[in-house]
Image (spheres, rainbow, N blue to C red):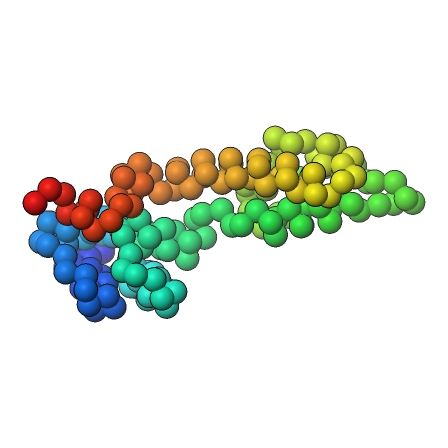
Length: 170
């Protein structure tokens, strides 16, 4: 997106949150960080965050909303566990079918990483669902945090503070 379009995104934020009065330096920082996205997707992210009824967002919230809309970030681990648990419970003649996990078309590639870490045979042989769920969620959380940091990057994480932190010293 061109710089003037990125400035329009910051102006859109100020329109949704009238108390947001960015300095020229804040506008420049925000504009340079949303410039990597298309105007339409950045504006849609601002509208999405505004619909959530939150106080005016920091830069990280807007960038994260764009990545969520793109599907770049890993989904919640609970629904993924439910799918994997159901697949691991497939039985034939009362016996658990030890079908390799990669045979299934999982909705997110991170599922395979978690299954590889835990082990398909281990998942298939677990009998106590709450214990399996806890193990899955712990492993999923670790992999999801790593994936999120790779997508969002260090610069964005450092810009997730309050407006005062973004504007710097007076």
